[in-house]
Length: 442
Image (cartoon, rainbow, N blue to C red; front, side):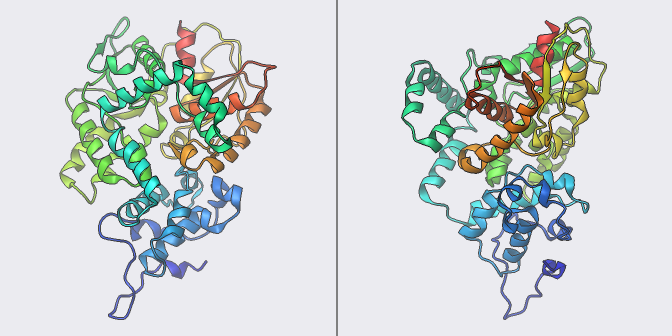
């Protein structure tokens, strides 16, 4: 591909105009940095699987340029190739030119969401889940209660046996509802154990309050053990990560305002999250307000300045090392939005290495996505299953009995991979790094 295709077409009365609509869209300042060198190709999971240029970062940027130059319609072809992107941002790590691909794909999806009509069923499901359930605590909590009844009644197990292959794959990704929900702890303050060294706020998430309540409990315990007074603001809500990835930027902005205001009310040393996907978007809140509602820019920047992943925070302080030994062979899968988006690699490994008895085995191709990517493993299940199969082969090579990661979505995906392996000869478990520390402390 010629680099000259990057150049905007000079506009005259006879020239075509951009096929992007008004509002936020991929910016020339960002996509012009792509020099089409191709170093991103081997980093891209979909290109590695399909070998198709249009399903690579370079190819997707090329399509954005053609839409911007009026040469390509913002239609089903573009939507298909851009939807197939995991937004894992491994290409950003590989890129020598510093292309901020995450900004580009998310802005392009915002254009698709605003100006392209998706098939009715797909549109309705997206609007129902992302627009009418996730942003509202009471609706989310009610959904969780219904799911819990469904799971405990035996109907879930029965339905899985009756479903055809692909739907069965999607059904096994359904998170288990935990009791009690972590929603009960919103609005509380948990004192530090012994001397208080820090005052931090904990971002609890949305689905995590239902399906990863015990992970949230463990996170609070580990923080308090390390001298943190933990404030859990009551008015916080969904971070908006799934909405940003889906192009629903107006909803994401509304959620961002709520969270910025909820955490602005306290004088915190840090705002902590245990979810890499949430943390990536939380650290980029200001991007949502650069062209819309600029009055929120400064509050967003103050919020972003205090955001920390829990592994990043703990590795950056003198964390307590009074661990009991855990004699297990362990490996670690880097969440894409921790490794590539937040550029955090050493912090979780530092924490793992501090636990006595652990035999750590580095996972080959850990930088390649496991296929979770928010709700990607649901809406693009065929590709997600291919990526998961590759990941499980690499995990099997380590011989690890404990697989660690640092993101709830990755936990779900890897647990589904373990469950599907049908290997009853060894017990394997999938845990968050913080759950390993919590277990070692007690």
